[in-house]
Amino acid sequence: MRLFGLTGWSGSGKTTLMTKLLPALIGQGLQVSTLKHAHKGFDIDHPGKDSHTHRMAGATEVLVSSPKRWALVRELRDEPEPTLAELLSHMSPVDLLLIEGFKRDRHPKLEVWRRSVGKPLIAAGDPTIVAVVSDGPVPESPVPVLDLDDIGAITALIVEKALPLKMMGS
Image (cartoon, rainbow, N blue to C red; front, side, top):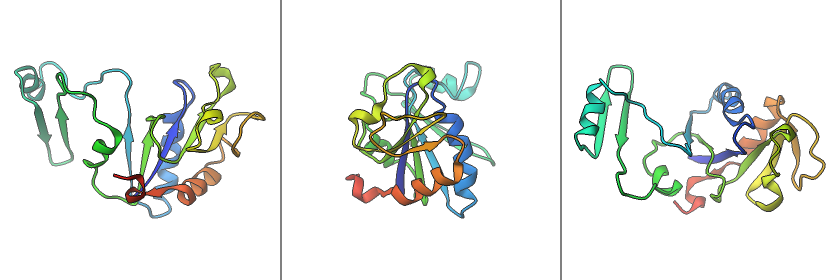
């Protein structure tokens, strides 16, 4: 399994780019999964659902299964948030795992950057960023800049630069 990440500030378009990259990469015959970091809490089950009732009653983990999908929800309670390496151990092997977020981790990544967001360029201080994708010129970028709409160039770069999981120390 090879890993590659997308990082950038909130509102830069990471998720929008991810939804364009997935069909392009899958169209190349790759099996692709994603892992996304959420800075705020999130819920995939809601009050009134049996799985939610199980969690609220104190279950540490709740696995919900159906003929179409399954999901495992783990309540951290007072445990620290797991590291990227710990999370990777829960992923089933695929050709490529795209990671959204986790900007401080050491895997190769693209920075999605828009001047209009008004945030500094992360690539200026992060050697794990191999390129910037943007909706305009970024002359201050220390790495190559790709057009946000050039999905072919972006997917080619991801396929070239993705690192095997074993090289990530996980």
